[in-house]
Image (tube, rainbow over all chains, first blue to last red):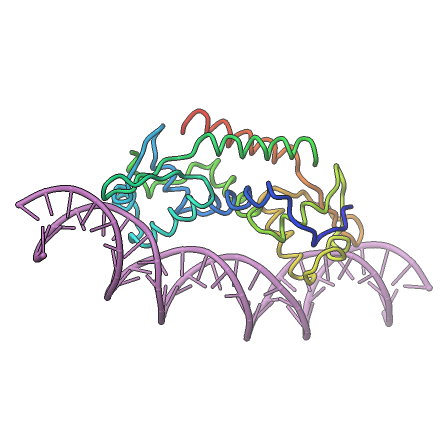
Length: 103
Length: 103
DNA sequence: TCCATATGTCGAGACTTTTCGACGTATTTG
DNA sequence: CAAATACGTCGAAAAGTCTCGACATATGGA
């Protein structure tokens, strides 16, 4: 048994933790499922299919971007989002490796 | 763009979602980090290294068990918990595969 | 049976997250 | 520059989660 409950969480876990929190919400899952392969969507498009208000969608997009799950780019008046697939694949590979080797 | 925002979340995602929620909390991460490879711990042992009260730990253990992250078994007066490694490996493999193939 | 130990449940309060209208900023167009 | 469009932020209320003391249940031993 590892007794150091209060020690610092490994840095890799802090990043993963944000991903887990981001993916643990149903609205955010629905937003992710809205994207098709390699697709980029602007905020209005996401709001259009969502049942939430624009500020609420904006809130979720912010969390997803801060977690690294989505990338974003402003072009003109619009802000486009896309799924950061390489990051997610790497994150889950890391989790899998940690799990396999350490636990 | 997939416009069916309100349709049912794929069943596999519902399961994953609970795992993500379970792993997205720092106290629950610390509980998991308390386990060493293949180890089984009873509630008192986990409470002993935790900074939380027993009811709070019990709450987190319940969420982890319901998510499938921990297994548990009552033996005599004690309830033992262990990390459900096969389940976690399978879950993350599924996520990885879904991500790779669909998104 | 009576007591000690191990754990779960309940419920109120504390704390956190989510939600949306109102407002503000940036960009493009007439 | 004025108006329209796209988006973010603010702040207060609603909703959800967490926390712990008090109580309840279950097991094993004297």
